Amino acid sequence: MAFSGDTMKINLEFDQAKTVNEVLTQVYDALKVKGYDPVSQIVGYILSGDPTYITSYNGARGLIAKIERDELLEELVKKYVQNI
Image 1 (tube, rainbow, N blue to C red):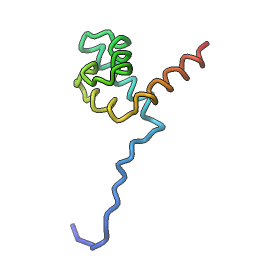
Image 2: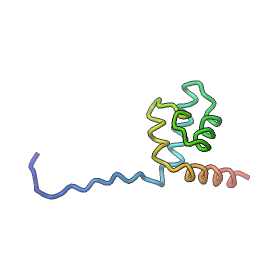
Image 3: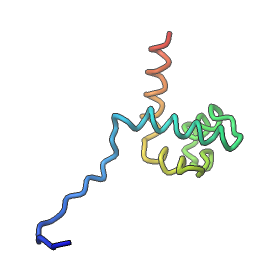
Image 4: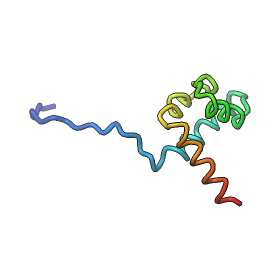
């Protein structure tokens, strides 16, 4: 690999379009696989901010930590209202 001398630009910004839906789905699935009640665990996390409510299985805890809790709540309310 040749060194060009140019500075590489890395975008570490989390893709917000995919985040909330996909992350919630992945976290829900991970909690279910591990035998937890996903709804109760996610509610506990949103209310307390304590990441131990979310399993580390399949990186679920790390994924959900990338999203602000108010964004999670906003997305959940949006989905609920759309289904009324």
